[in-house]
Amino acid sequence: MLDIFQYDFMVRAFMAGFAIAIIAPMVGIFLVTRRYAFMADTLAHVSFAGVAAAFLLGFEPIITALLLSIGTSLTVEKLRSSGKVLGEAGLAIFLSGGLALASVLISASRGLNLNLSGVLFGSIATVTTLDLQLILGLGVVVLFTIFFLYRQLFAISLDEELATVSGLPVTRLNRILVILAAIIVSLSMRIVGILLVGALMVIPVIAAMQYKKSFFATFIISIIISLFSVISGLFVSYYLGWASGGTITLIAITIFVTSSLINLRRN
Amino acid sequence: MQIKVENISFNYRHNQVLEDVSFEIQTGDYVGIIGPNGGGKTTLLKLMTGLLKAQHGHISIFGMDPRKARAHGKIGYVPQRIVQSNIQCPATVEEIVASGRIAKSSDGKVIEAAMKDADVEQFRTRSIESLSGGERQRVFIARALASEPIILILDEPTTGVDLKAGRNFYALLKHLNKEHKLTIIIVSHDIEAVAKEVNMVLCLNRKLVSTCKHEDLKANTEEILKALYGPDKNFIHHQHA
Image 1 (cartoon, rainbow over the protein chains, first blue to last red):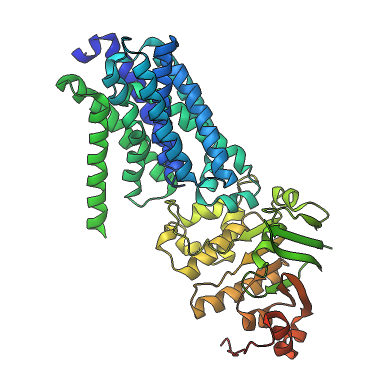
Image 2: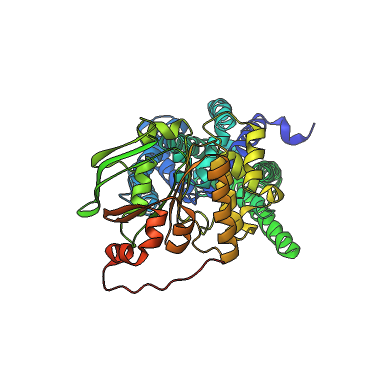
């Protein structure tokens, strides 16, 4: 056995990373194709506020981040669908607001032991048993939800108006999609960090889109790219002592650049 | 009676777009809706598809509210901007057509038939972004047909499509109307083409200015158009080859 797996925290990190690498692009593809990729970053910044609040109040960080993130995702979606605030403008308000709230809470919790670097950039050593249980449990929920709603989510990605006239409950499906995004963002922050959580949902998808295949093929390719980025990123991060989030993101970007060059050459 | 529109009025805030519009459409009708920009054509289609709800009046499709009718897959719809929009979704023609059957159980034979009817079988594995405007047009018709609708509603379907593709497109609609007994409602700026193809014309400029058979529109084109667009407008005729 590789010496990397002698440590329990590495086994937990790999199991969590494997699960997140599968589910992140599965939801990310529906956000990217609807030009809603910014949603993941917004929810990540709100999750940061959730983590800071948890440290201050003594709650479990991942659960606080999860609840705050789900609440925000539903509020943003309601604002977007009502047409009162433009989608991106609504996201910008919550992104800045989340970061602002986090900074205030962190300054208020001075003296408490918050591993800021780990929260922001990911730290594989910080995945707890509770985190892993939540990641695997909610990961299965995300997996089954996408499995059952794949056709419907594809239809609304293509065009919301067409999907509505086709008889789909578009509002309900949109809510489910943003809740799934909120769950993934909160679950991923231990591995990739809050600042890079969006990368895992977006970069593998846009890299896969470079191959100009069908939607389903793009869906599968993005999962493969994500898995490769996370697994290889965790190895590199362990052996070189680099931040896991940054390493994983840089690998995903390298794959995106390579895919774009292959696409350019083909055309 | 397939579609009954009774005393419909609709405002966008303080801007009245439709005022007391009423008409009836029978099964198998091929209806053209013409009128100036801002005359309420697209709003009327959105009310008929249940995308908007009228502040006054009532619309029924087979005696049902449009929202209920669309939930049963009775309405096929091709919106105005879909052909020209930059579709970011990496989808093949086959995937797009199959998505039209989303509210019903997936049926490969119906999807195949829809692609055949709209003549897009040969593009099935191609991405939508690689197709021309006319080809995209047919893909979205096939998508609408995949739900086996009874009514097909199209908003400005030939905008941005070249003359030949436009001609082929109208031939396809005629075929669907005659052979499949599909009721078709089409909004178009191309009055000559509409007059040539449809059997009933609704002239709409906030109010329903007139409802006429296509023979009446042909015989009294100038008169009807002046009533619709205003007496100071000049009309230049063109012929579709």
